[in-house]
Image 1 (tube, protein in one colour):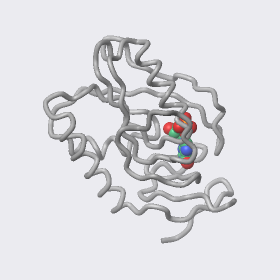
Image 2 (tube, rainbow, N blue to C red; image 1 turned 135 degrees about the horizontal axis):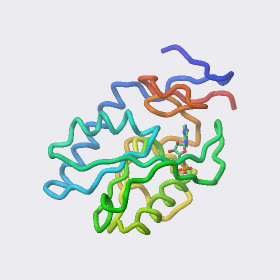
Image 3 (cartoon, rainbow, N blue to C red; image 1 turned 90 degrees about the vertical axis):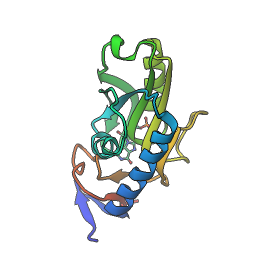
Image 4 (spheres, rainbow, N blue to C red; image 1 turned 90 degrees about the horizontal axis):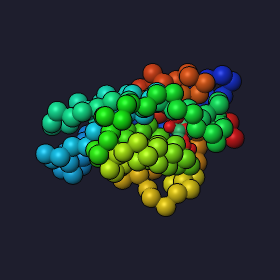
Length: 180
Ligand code: IMP
């Protein structure tokens, strides 16, 4: 598989599409087993999780209620450390409900921690997370995401929803930066 370049940075293949799809199927089986008959409200964390969520939801056995939440903190390859809410659903959707966040990638955990607290403040009973990728060596919080597709090293990735400067989201495979 060819290396790719985005905004002057070079990337090589990390996870190919068939392995991503296989992992998503396994995750959906775990979710179906865990939540059978009692699904939480699903919140897709935009923009990155849109591809992952689309594939995951195809394999969910029941009708589930879902909405989106949109925050941002990244500038290029670096997190600003400051989370800004672009969109969060109205309280009726989450009040007294259990919530499952669908994330593309959990890195330091700041976004997940922020969203968990914010949703609980707005009345959510409980917040859990399913993430396609997890960077265990960068994660700074005690509670791990409950469902994880792949653990990866401390490397910057693009593809399957993840971007560099809004580029690369549509790539079918996941690529890692090889500049440093
Ligand atoms: P955290 O708050 O540090 O866990 O970062 C979460 C968000 O940062 C993710 O939802 C992504 O939007 C972005 N992010 C973190 N690592 C990467 C990466 O390697 N590639 C692309 N986006 C990333």
